[in-house]
Amino acid sequence: MAYIATFDMGTTAVKAVLVSVDDDRIGRSEALDDDARMEIAASASITLPRSVEEDGWHEQDPEDWWHCFIEAWHALTDALEGMNAGKDATAGSVVGIILSGQMQDVITVDSQCRPVRKAILYSDGRAAHQAGLLAEAYGEDRFLDVVGNRCEGSLPLPKLMWLKEHEPQAYADTAHVLFDAKDYIVARLTGSYIGDVTACSTAGAMNIRTRSWEKPLIAAAGIDIGIFPELHSPQDIVGRVSRSVSALTGFAQGTAVFAGIGDAGATTLASAVTKSGEYNINIGTSGWIAGVSEGPITDQPGLANLAYAMPEGYINGVPFLNAGGVHGWATRVFAAGVEDSNGDGRSSQQDFDRMSGLLERSVPGSHGVLCLPYLVGERFPVMNADIRGAYVGIGVNTDRADMARASLEGVAFSLRQGLECFDAKAEDITLVGGGAREGVWCQILADVLGSRIEVLDNAAVMPAVALSCLVLYTFHEEKRQENGAPVGEGIGRVLGRLRSQRHGTLYEAKAGAMKLYDAAYERFVRLYPSVNAMQ
Image 1: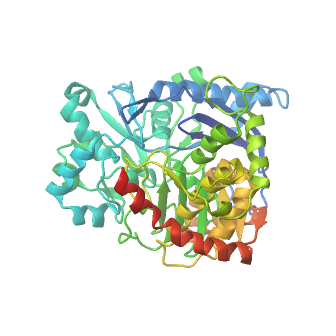
Image 2 (image 1 turned 135 degrees about the vertical axis):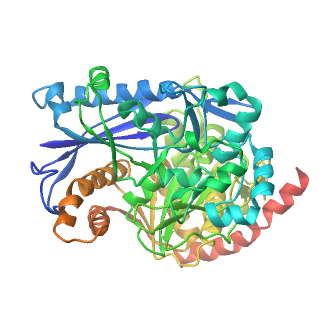
Image 3 (image 1 turned 45 degrees about the vertical axis):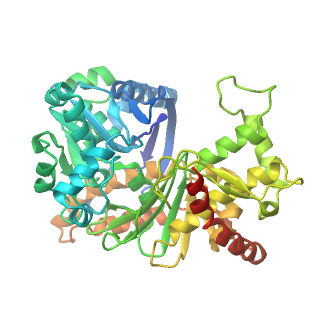
């Protein structure tokens, strides 16, 4: 039995999944075995310390990532200790380590891989001024054409400009910069400073078509290109666990470490989205719609483009700041109970149960109540960090069920606006994330979007399976090419395997609700201009 250790480096937790592969020929066989059984052997989740959030700045300490990563790994081995010969046997059976993680960060380290300062997170928009300067110096249209995304203050390249201007000593001490939380872990494991092309598409410095750093752009920003990481495909082996790290972590010396992929790429891959008309919606605290295409889509404001794991493929994504976080807010406001409060501002399970009860007795359209769900500003369908939410249509008979449901309908309307950015009509929509656990919300989405939605049963572990498939692909591809198979053919096999393992609950759009929501949607799209004019 062989194992693949997978990790997701999120903003709130490090999630670890150990995948077993029933194939003792791993790394030696001539083809990717379609019948090689993969199972989840163990999983663990370690909560990260809260990020620093002050005046719109969002930061985390990379050392916290590292400590929680090690803790998560030890939790996996503890879980398996009673199932085999012990921790040493488990570690020695791990053939590969691969990670996904939060993208668009600025992680600065010195020559010894020590953090120079806290990491500046993707949600931090402090560099708006520097983004304006860069757009003027390099050309706004030119930037969009080369990078595939608009020049804005949340991108790492303008943030590096901010760092050089406001913290010159920190910039001077920086030997390497990384753009995904997982890449800091890779650097600690191997001593290699790398980035995958999917995550680095969010850096604001990579030519999305050539998948290489754009030297004239980086020069225009006044940043030293020598500190940038080496670019890799997600499935590349980028190093191996060193002796010192083996002693510290318990991983076997020489274990292969892979480049991995940014979290949006991992979710898209796991959903087996491969062609136009297929979409994956992720409802976490924030939200994301992902489709794929043969080229970047640059004529839609707010739409992001990422290089995909497939050669010449692109992920086209619409990011939303307000998604599952709106559900959490509505739960606290409309469903919280004093007697079971956690005392820390977080909702209890009883609160969530009451929220589900409210939604069960609510009706489509919330008796005419509309909610603009922009609680923390928004990136799409509008880019406005200062806008806040609003309700309209409240009457004397409006109750908590109407208010709670309207907030979730507002998120669904925003997602509908996002889908309208894509040329291809939705033929296949998968739904993942914490929001997918709320059944009424899933039905709201199907009705608002006018499409059948599949809520994946195993969504929590599918990214781990997808990462494991990339590891298998790499181990087998070399032999395939020696036997005359074309480069990249195995990726198609990986996607086919992931699609075959996709199972879920289907929500069909209901004609009556669709008609009602079509009318409500027309009111919703007029809501933002009116509210924005008053704020």
